[in-house]
Length: 289
Image (cartoon, rainbow, N blue to C red; front, side, top):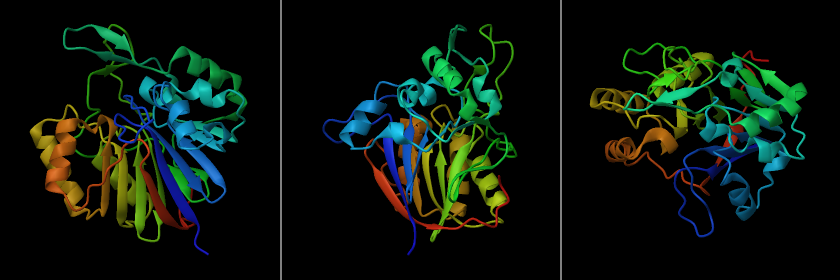
């Protein structure tokens, strides 16, 4: 019998069903057979509420995976870890660095892991797995670790820094995705794709000896993308012949509209409450821990 992978969007910028909450952030609930993995936690205001409404017990996650160390992906950690004993909390070491964003007027604001979440992680530090390379987080489910930057048209998608004075740029080396192979091809879940969505997809294909990509879901951080980057991204996605594309969160309204217009037969909704189901195909050939 083929094992199923069920993915539920727990946090996203949009919610269309009655009783569900939207917030600027992202969280995916992933069920792989009997295993449950939480990929990101949103800002923290919507996760518990939406999980309850969707009849999901987020605090029974076997593993937590952080796509990167920004507040809108880590703010719900304290609630999830309260009374929870996950097998592991996976993150890139650089996710815990100070993180700031610069506004147009030159001022800065802190956007790193909130204090309550950082304290919660410290209380569970014996379960913290710091990994910068591809790591297996559940049966068939792999976190990419740091993504190589190879395209010349992609960047982190904003003015991000490691200090409040905005003197040291943050390369966001902690940015990572999750992927697995379904019977129809690879499925890739993105947090924000600060490494570049095309860089990420190329790396996943590199790790899997060029296997085709069936679906890409999540944040693509194209909200500040100039027209040239957006056009080249759409061209690359079209060339990869991806069957299902679910732009969400930081993809941005204009970029999301452009993707839907350019690839109308491939784009699918990816708002709070959306569920996806895939048949898992083993990735035993990939040498990861």
